[in-house]
Length: 168
Image 1 (cartoon, helix red, strand yellow):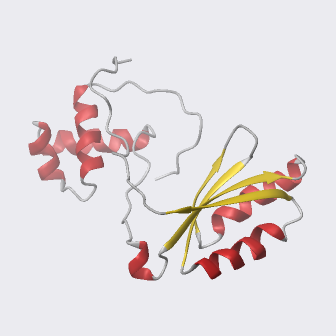
Image 2 (image 1 turned 180 degrees about the vertical axis):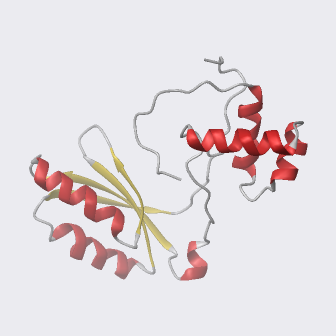
């Protein structure tokens, strides 16, 4: 499946589409037979509807969630990054490089005083310091960073569609 891109136009979703999405967000490993049963439709319909949601760009992927501490990445941080110069070549280089670094969990292009927000996970505070020095402080396009340690992360629901949204 193709990665999601911003912005996308809303697509028509009926009650069955919304229910399929909610069930898959709750459990992406759900079998087609279970999905059909939970949504009250035939398995063939569930399969066709799910494929249509993928083709229309509504469902963009399925993933495994890793417990970061169990793989030695117990220190998480959010790093605000302000670029020194807003030159297209440097912006493109920065936005292509950062998401490829194994420590980067997410990168957000944001508005306000800063340009980017990085969510990273490393093994220790020493590794965090070294990562910032090696990947940001020495990068000629970076003008300023501010690092915030993450003490806890409470994941949201991640995509269920509110019932009160009007159909398009």
